[in-house]
Picture (cartoon, one colour):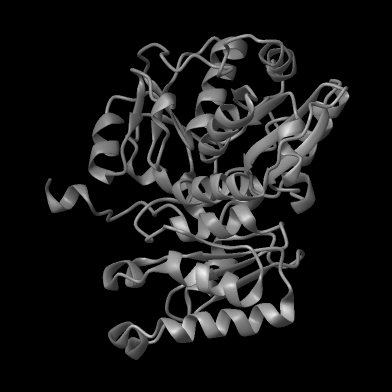
Length: 373
């Protein structure tokens, strides 16, 4: 592969996996530690976490020094975490890796075991290395959460649902998730657990009591797949969009035994319209365009994407040159404004900002897909 296929000279990069871990666990009362040099936490809370200024959370950096990296002083990492946890009393402790500990071979799993032995607080590591996107890290975090803390409960009498995979990196803080929860309640669902935005730690323990899981981002698929294998809970992938809100009826079909797994057709048809976004949001938007606007669309997903979401006209590519090349004949592009400079001037460009890509720059323009369509 040419070096130019691994670099970008114009477009931005997506939020890293370690930030995805912190975003997934942000509201659950746990303590998240990024094992890295000082400064990375400020990148997370400044650019990746819009809840930072109005929601309490325990997200910390280990402040790994050059000498620590050279000498491999894991005892200092463990002692610092134990000391902080003794004061904060978190529900759990999660240690996420970054490039430096990955390169020097730090055993974060062993460190987490030692922390748990000394604190008696559930502790685990998340094997991130800073080289993947936020979806990879959040997916690992959600999976670890349900594996460690869920229990076997009987299904509720009322039709119930879990919402899995919601982070502001995909949905921002524009009210969409709150409207989605209201939408589900208005359609007769009891919400058991929310993995992501609006999360509550105690509800995670009862997550198996729901009849069905709604996966709203590809980072929720690993947890949903595990819950199906462990408790038999079926899941549906997709998000409702104003004018094409088929989610509620489809969820009820899935809960009743239907084999439906997604509310969109990932096969699609060839088109000169392209949507660039996270896979579930992009596919749901493409389904909306087809059903409500009579427009077929291809999908480009630069960040990590679950294989089950990849169809013939879904393109997984993070190379600026490859994205530019596939867009050269596009007549319409729907994407974050930071993609516009690599789109052909002749193409109609429709801004669809994505917080995981452009951070807070275009936050105020991110649409609430249940209202702003």
